[in-house]
Image 1 (cartoon, rainbow, N blue to C red):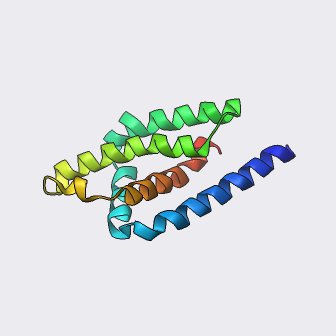
Image 2 (cartoon, helix red, strand yellow; image 1 turned 90 degrees about the vertical axis):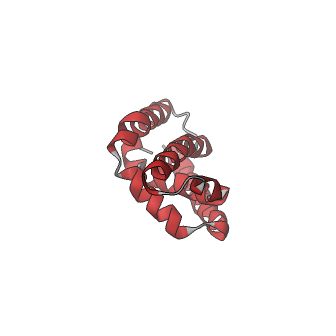
Length: 120
């Protein structure tokens, strides 16, 4: 149990470091808008988010959870969310203007948002 608690602490430290690194080139307004859009869209939740959460719950249950790979899974959700947002609300080509750091920050924010459901 002590090793598990140490793992949780180290994962939280990695999250803090990633947030600090990602904050340097992040468009915070776009990131916040997309996080809100993605977390409140039912179609995205049913289509992508629920599958990601179930997958990560299995990984936590088997003790094979990896925070970096979890963030990578959420990058797929971010890409889907950006495409859908662009179709509904933005001009064509808007998605290409979003920097990688912003996308990574969104993925990390979504991972943090759903961590209670995942059971980290």
